[in-house]
Amino acid sequence: MYVQTFKVSSLFMQNQCYLIHDLKNGILIDPAWDYTLINNFLTENNITLNGILLTHSHIDHTNLADKFAINHNIPVYIGKKEAEFFQFTCNNLQFVSHLDNINLGSFTIQSMLTPGHTIGSVCFLIENHLFSGDTVFIEGVGGCYDKSSNPENLYYSIQYLKNYLPSTTLFWPGHNYGVEPGKDLSYLMKNNIYFQFDTIDQFVSFRMRKNQVITF
Ligand SMILES: [Fe+2]
Image (cartoon, rainbow, N blue to C red; front, side, top):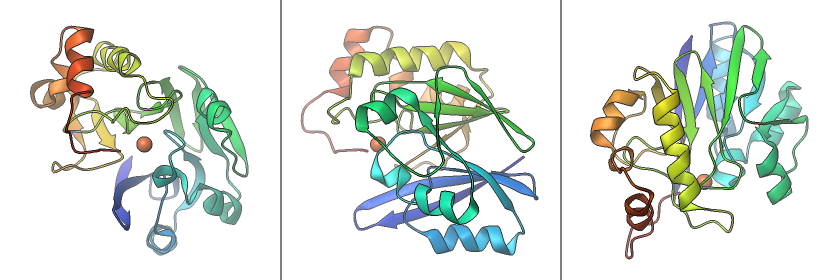
């Protein structure tokens, strides 16, 4: 399985979206901002899309989902809670819950409900690759500025990932704050401060500290 990273942007927003593929078929994760860049890669490499995975509903992770869904006639997966809370709509939309298995082409994907950044944020595990959206960045975790954010839930989501995933799991986040994606869990355990807090109070007070730079 190959992971292709696309660095895309719109004004002040910079995102990483991903294509996983086996040289024939592929799945997009959080497609946004640059349809031509992504679609040209598919065409040039003769890759047929099987589906789209959305980690959450924020526009910088979803704004091309409908266009790809229509043009490639493929399903789009998002957390059920997320879609219901935000009334998110899109063509060919399917809902996932905690620990669902989704089979698309030769890929089996496991969804994990990881609320905190938003109420229904989901991470997707494919083999040893975790697509973590705005739940986990290599350098930190997602901000809690959304009306549905909950830093306590984010703490429990991080504990869940720490306990559930093998230390060799590679993380592919939605944003880059200086470190390239694809680092493993053991790297995050050493370098990501949010993986080092032992108590919920420490975690929440650091996440919600004053005068911080806004992250998405
Ligand atoms: Fe977000």
